[in-house]
Length: 243
Ligand SMILES: Nc1ncnc2c1ncn2[C@@H]1O[C@H](COP(=O)(O)OP(=O)(O)OP(=O)(O)O)[C@@H](O)[C@H]1O
Image: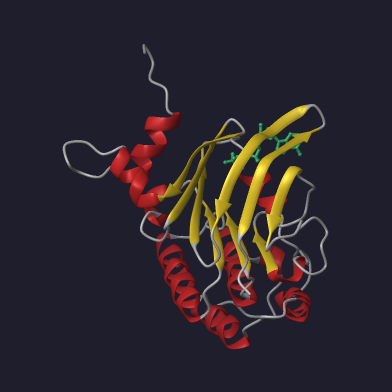
């Protein structure tokens, strides 16, 4: 069953450093949501809370239950980020074995297709790959896992424009084949603009906008034309010198 998310007054602090405060939001099951915000706004923190890797204050429910170290929820929740679990100095096959064995919806055909497309070999060592190839490998693991909740946090780092487009296409194709709840966090807002239906925008730890991407585009549009999500983000969080 694909996971829905409900957050009521969700906060998180790293020691005394408050990273998120009073987040209230719902993410419907089976949607692709963009998690947007400026540097340091709290996106990765929220991603880790949703993936059950850190304990939220307030009420954070994934599929109706707390994800924090939850053995029912965690195997079906995939967070692909800079800190994804990978054996750095071992062959890719060692990491994929770990993922394959711990992910109940693992799609071996999709994994092999992605590795072929990105010309990666299981015999390669992760630390010997280029930055973009490393990102492509973890993206392949994340897509093939088909988690009921799948979060990609800045997965594109180092990927060239062609690999990024191949990733977006593969994500959409796999979403159509197996609908699930996907959250995409990226600073390349214009690239993911057409993939996302729902949006959460965080700024300095607070949720400042949430809802259908089209409603936000409409709300921030001018003279009958819709705004882009980049415009929405700049309108809501940007500052101009002299103003
Ligand atoms: N391990 C940590 N210890 C202390 N503070 C942290 C830690 N990780 C993040 N923070 C702080 O929490 C806030 C939110 O950080 P977070 O990484 O969630 O932001 P982000 O939106 O993902 O940023 P970026 O887009 O730059 O990756 C920032 O002010 C950051 O400095």
